[in-house]
Length: 254
Image 1 (cartoon, rainbow, N blue to C red):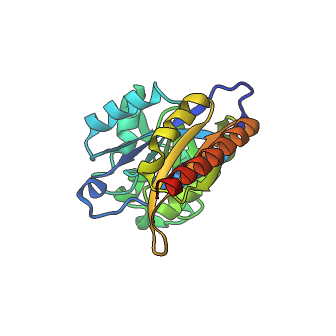
Image 2: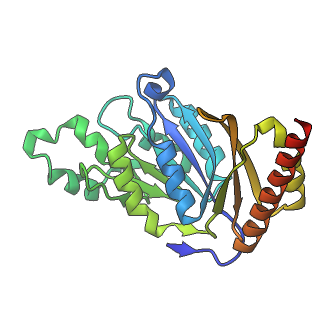
């Protein structure tokens, strides 16, 4: 991985492509995986969009996202069927031709012999001009990388293999660090105080996540995030001090 020297964050978006996701027939399993992967290496996932298998909508979303973020990861739409149009849409977005790529053809010839490499499977070898291939160690049909757009399969096992291939090549920023504190208080009991801490510690972010504990009832986890370990420690201590004060006040109020 190529770490960025300054404090400018490296950002990313995910573009999920497929009618089956929007209809609910297929449950997306890729967004969370990619988000965790990127967070772990210091890339900030800023946006996720889901679009249908409609070329104009894919092109519009892709052009909006690729000009806004460091990277765009697409999932879905690079298989052998008529509605797998992601590669064509990406070529159109970049204004480049698309054709059968000898490198991709050679890969599929390792798996499919003679008539098995039919017209449908050959669709998976069509790559926009100028793109680098993204190796697929699961089923060999490659993804591709053009500009700042990384095009991956929608099948989770294949997508994960492709992400492992491109991950070491990504530029990364400072990793986001985090601490979690169990509040032992309801979210509404600490909302105002947490907002004040956010104002006092602008280089940290604070999130509150309510949950129900079978023993104690409504409760809250507070997650503090920062790229600076010292600022994270200071913000975490401030949360702990605040919680002690809130609990003392609630206890005194009966």
